[in-house]
Image (cartoon, rainbow, N blue to C red; front, side, top):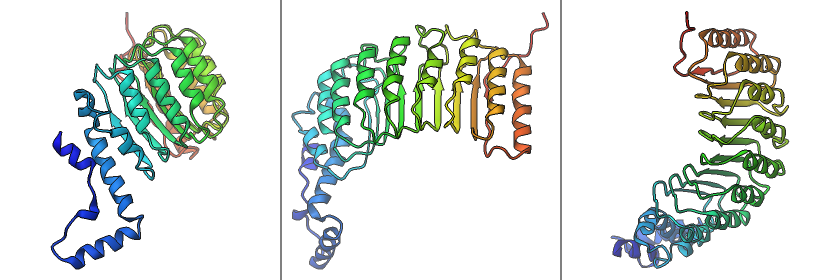
Length: 331
């Protein structure tokens, strides 16, 4: 604790050097790059970031004034935190974290996986803080944060500034169609959003038609879509067929993971492959994680299709990945 306190109060003005001339040169160099005060703010914020997780465990975030220290680093562009598996990470902890987010941040990545005490009020506080920034890239892992409802995810999407360009959301398994549709409705209003990663792995409540609505409501400039619907038991071939028909015209890269979806088979993926073949001049990178039970003939078809596209030089990169594909049954 004493080391953290000293780091948070670090002042280079009182630092010494072996040679006076060296100190003068260092101070002059810093003056040309924002000055000693700017250097102090950056060094103190590094200590705050490094000690934040432990201070959550100790319950000393507010006592150490970490939010104030971090927020004062008003030229920070990138911020990354890992709070995963802090089961006692509460709404109050989220509020303290939100207060610390500098308005200058452009790239934010936070892992809240298994923060099971995190609720709507906490995520709402973070959403409010992000609304005051001009963040361009945001990645939030909220897996197993089961107290979070669809309302707070919708609120998060609504509060995101129009500066957002890349968004990654890893969501918990209890979400349903209403959450995804509401999320899509708000994201559609973000004109600059060009990359979307949405992980719905294991969401057993998602029903037929929801991923069709997701792409139908896609932001107008969406260029890259990474959609994970693995282990969603209600996903069927019709969902993949409808999904492929509604892919936005602006799309250039697609990653679809349907591993573990027992009702998605060769029919759905062959239809998707056919649609991608038709769109080959637009979509330049494709990655498909196929369900384990797919017939080998489906995989061979996809490999031949990609080989043909490469030969025609229509694409720059092609990836098709199938995980644990079984040979067709002879029974």
